[in-house]
Length: 314
Image 1 (cartoon, rainbow, N blue to C red):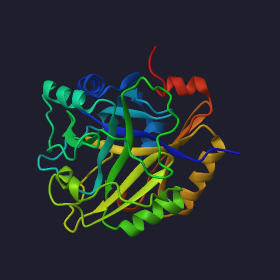
Image 2 (image 1 turned 90 degrees about the vertical axis):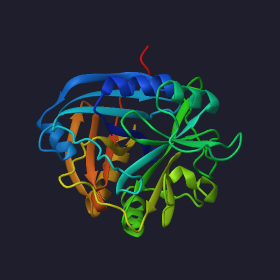
Image 3 (image 1 turned 90 degrees about the horizontal axis):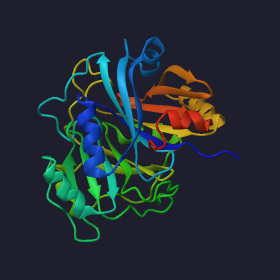
């Protein structure tokens, strides 16, 4: 019997890798887990659906087992910076949500780091939330209380001493129905059964709340689909290497899970880009409806799992 594919990674394209890594460690409590410089080449470009690819990369981990943040600093193609008037209602990957063990400490650190909250604190202890932008402008929602939804409880706690866990990602789409079909039928997500936000969380949207929302889950990870009547398309010439949230990845330690899901993705409306293999590990990027980027990966070997940044540096 094999495990289902679960979300195992959130990836970013950043302009200042050192500053970003320092902020996520010192302010939020993530642990460095490795990295590499001057990577890429034709196979990596084909996997990511890019014309060329040369980059530095780094990883960080929190409380969860087999889950990481992945940060790319692209040298080629040269990443376009976030547009100055970027808004949470713009189409694409829009935000991630984090549970933290000490909400007050994190809010204090945000101010000390020169990145004060971007929204008022909502709710009262022990259920407070606040929005903040990281040094690259990515919107984060910080939660004092963990998400408690049936089937989405935080499991696989590998590092109970870690003070942070990634709990959800938000994706702004034009057509929730079409996107739901892609994530459920091609990628195996399930409906979570209840919303992640209510009217009391309106300030966290940094503007008007969305017209429609739908919450899905894959393992313990939640995916919040939202739509607005006036969402802007991605900038002309957009590439996933441009600054901001890049994608999420579904992963498994069992190769047969990966192969099965990759086959389903090929049978869907998704574009499956080239596959990159390193030993027994493999990864592929998909482009789904509306230009959504998702990665599929398998790492059945513990040594490769460590080398790929899923365990903190010793």
